[in-house]
Length: 251
Image 1 (cartoon, rainbow, N blue to C red):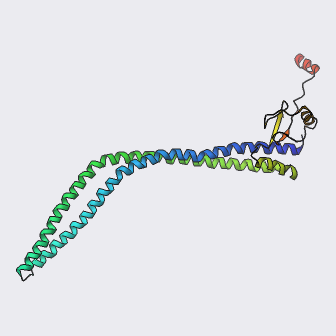
Image 2 (spheres, one colour; image 1 turned 60 degrees about the vertical axis):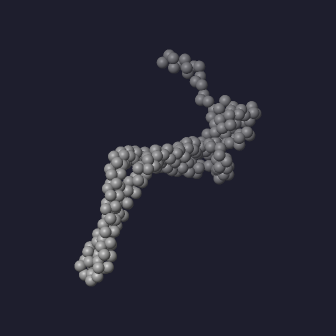
Image 3 (cartoon, helix red, strand yellow; image 1 turned 90 degrees about the horizontal axis):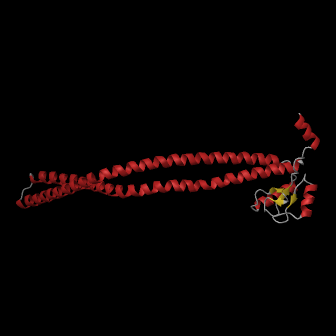
């Protein structure tokens, strides 16, 4: 077997390995997507409970701030009442104080109702949040493992590419260009063995004359007339002579 043919065989081997590894790489986004689906489902459930919780908390905060303003209003007008000089001013200040107090009472009742709602939601929120945290941790573990696998696949592909390049140095440029053309057309590996007179790339039998020519010049590649792949033939190992076989039995 010539050095060039050996180089082509080595290249084809690494191309086949690279193809398998790249198929695995294509599955990685699908695996991540599948793992994320459950996390997204838990996120939706968490949002459904967290939304009302946030709303009640915002209402309490807003109404508490309004109460503080109302208390400042009461203090302001109480101080004003000590300085008024007419009955009309006194009555007007009293009305402002009464309105502020009524507002406070109403807001305090609404805050109490909101706190009751929070107490009702809290157990469910804790449950959903705990489940979400567990699913998120599981997703992060899965994602980390997948990314680790991707890095390993990338490194393995890089090694095969390196060895393929080293083998390509044994191949003439014209042959190498044809090999790349076939590979680029999606026929990987571009070089295949002929077994039993059949091209192992397209699984079609070679014409007897072509097969005989291939046997006669098995130290170089030929081209399959059906699929245009580069083909080669490896002669079977020579059978031991009968005498040698007999000697082996005796010994």
